[in-house]
Image (tube, rainbow, N blue to C red; front, side, top):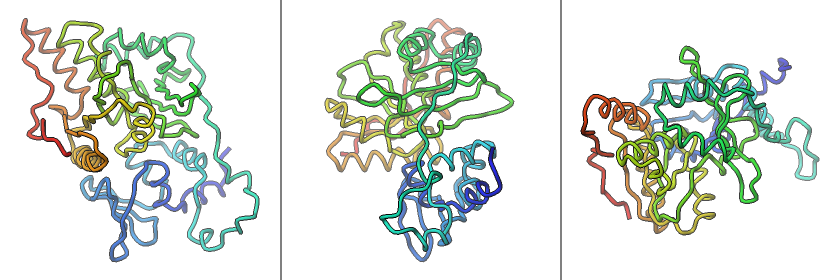
Length: 330
């Protein structure tokens, strides 16, 4: 049960700190305004609660508003995410923090990750991913066998990430009902361990905003080559957003990766994030480049590619037509 105190606490959560922890964003302050380095059009006022995302034309007050307006969460889901991460709750509480020796209260302790209960039948998962999204069933079966993908009892698709010891550390949900768009990370998820598909010693890593886009990219490769195993030749990482929180841990675990290919969404937020990440990791010694989708995202490209191959014997499709293709940032 969510009481009024929890709601009030969530409404006054320090938005700046929340976005730093929840999304991996970093900010620079100038003239009392905090600008997001990953998304320069996102600004937070000096009250650390009021925000405005200029490129989206969306503004609001507090972390609850942000999650509902920017990440399309319901009110209760937003409260659960904030309560789960247990960030600082108000400017007043920040000014009157307990001494370091004070023991943490129960409400300040982060929640453990608990995976949603599995469904006995997975018809909605296959209907949504295969029929509506066009994902190759071979890829879906492989991921399900590895427990990286399943359907919960509410009909949501669950994408799972593991740590070095094979322990579940991350899970994100994606709704399957078109009339009720729904997506969020499960409470207690550690974004350093996002969903990924790693099957080769390739020096290249393809990076996406979502698990579905990474699966779509893999499916396009199968469609183009006509080889159901072609997707296994490349490695793919979902950031579950536009922040690079998961990237350092992945690179630490896979030192053979030397080249990063940014495949973010083809919108302002995606392009800005892709360029920022490319430059950041070029400075670290990685070869980086952008390979943005032709349409809005790689799932849209997949659906176009499949439609083309059905309507013609020759598939007139190549991966990228962006001017940035082949532009290395090193």
